[in-house]
Image (cartoon, rainbow, N blue to C red):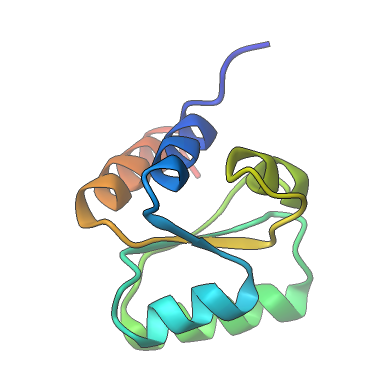
Length: 104
């Protein structure tokens, strides 16, 4: 099994305290202008995806759908997470570059 570089980078960001996870924390980060990137689990509900898509579009925050809730949670040291926001500009750019390169 290959190591998922994107999840590894999110994990490093989380250890550095640069990740907000969970619906409320992600929403606060986006609306507060602190989020530079939002990642939503591919298996999140359609309703959740639409709400994040609308919010990120309005606040002009890049949004990606990636991995599943379990993987997103594990890389942050939590159980399940439908969404994470990266609140460091350089880390967010590095993760977004990786996501774009993987064609997602």
